[in-house]
Length: 304
Image (cartoon, rainbow, N blue to C red; front, side, top):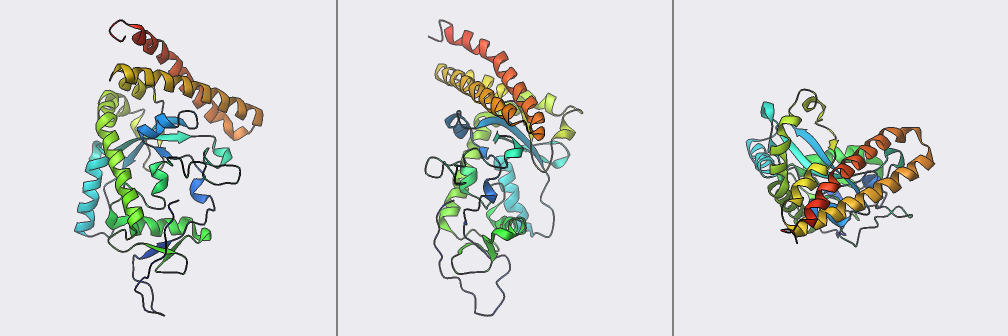
């Protein structure tokens, strides 16, 4: 978590904190690191030997609830920038996600001490913005924090108003911590670049399949529906000879990581691991089916 320092917060002693004002202090308790992170494409490739990556899809409803017209307009701007249009007035988030066995209840990047092993080594942007949410506008981050305070109440990391040792993070309309504001915009910029670079063209190739009656209802509003990244890798491999070689390297690294991860799970013999073991084997099969065509393309005269 980015280190932030407390600054004065103008609340009169003895008065209730202003509505929507939250302060934050990371306690390194690990509750935010109990699942693998969302990833950008650059991060998926960088961490090819650490994270098993998947395509992750989620349906997003229009903003509802007791919000102002300004709130709704700000959120609509975020949705247009980062999401894709979907039926019934909804939007679709197509992103990348690391996965691991839920029985482990931890991110694969956590070290033996329970701390982030990537904290000083290109920690994913999705982790840099925690406890905020890059897919919500700045005006709605107070609502994000209120929700996460309920989820992480015993961690005592998110508090309304001010508290010694906690840094002001958001008020009713803005993110007030400069480091977190920079992290939010960096994450949104990367997500927008992914949407333009591969999200929109990949969606165009998968739209018929995704909107089929057997698939679309399975894409949730909470959580993600996972698919093999093989279609994305096939798309990227057509971009340039250099990217083709990079895709081959990625496929080989993922196959090795999947095989090792499954072998470890089989030795652990946890009953809850079985569904993901089958899923990971399916991802490996998709990569093995894709690899020969990538290898043939890399050997063609025009590639050389």
